[in-house]
Length: 137
Image (cartoon, rainbow, N blue to C red):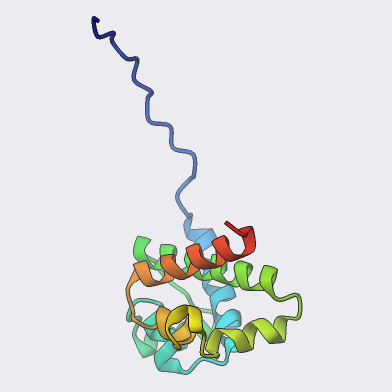
């Protein structure tokens, strides 16, 4: 049997980079989400990858400034987490409470506890878990 050449498929970027305008909108939405989740300043800064308290205060005033790639990805994951929670709980207040409630799926920790471990991957894991839960697979 002779091996046949395989035609390679060129890379095709399917998702565009988050623009600065979109990042500004994500930041404003993140402020609103964290208010709904009733997070402390320290929790908000940790979820945003160690954002300084001063920068977080400026965000809350509506002055976002430059947002780096890591922070854009963190906010995108947080919006995905919010979307997943909203799909699981039609009553928003139940979803906001669920974020802080102990959960056997997380070894007795809350979803917030898992996310507060501080790594970008912790947000990604939570988003994937919620996507799997609402997809039932």
